[in-house]
Length: 275
Ligand code: NAI
Image (cartoon, rainbow, N blue to C red; front, top):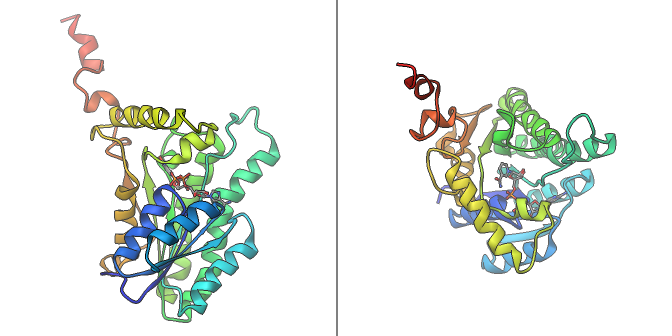
């Protein structure tokens, strides 16, 4: 019950990582307000929570919506925790083809929203002596080949913003950290490609299969894996942790496949033939 008596705001909490985190925080005693575009998913999580989770329809690309969401927590007794997590795949074009407005829309959704979340949470947290902010980045912030260019650039921005905000806000007792998820089976992949209906379950299974084979810990990542790390960073267990991130990726980013898969060709196996 690390969040007994605390109030948390979770953006993108109607689905996937945000949903699992809202449930985890509520399970540990928090009163949670979920802000999301998806009114149906938001109503569903509020209904399932037995009163611990409220829903406010929010578009994180609209500053006024962010302000209203945070004000709701403030009015209910004060804002203790903010999880800036809402997101989607963004523009898919490579840098040589991307349209300026698609670039801007991706940055607005994935980077500007996080900046504005921090911007408007900070004074509310400062007036109560502090708080904890966690932002969702991605392994695509650490290397290439994981996600489209605009998305990956925004997620790298989230990581550096996390450090800068931690430095700016430490004096107000506010800690700012990030989570860096690897492949996590959520709706983000299928929604991005417009896959729905009968094909959804098969597509989800295919994604889980690819994810399970892509890293040394050979299972698909789950939203609950990320929720556990967010709960740690948001809790007093992490009271000495700020301006950093936790990578939760099953080892996806530790090195080349040859480092953990003995069947995978490496320089050494290639040279064996010449001995
Ligand atoms: P998801 O699609 O299950 O959940 C995303 C939620 O954000 C949805 O409920 C959606 O309605 C909401 N959302 C989208 N645009 C919004 C807006 N303008 N305003 C408010 N809400 C909005 O996807 P998932 O995977 O749970 O994504 C959560 C975060 O995790 C995202 O920031 C994503 O980029 C990030 N992430 C996901 C990874 C994965 O493998 N699933 C890997 C790395 C990062």
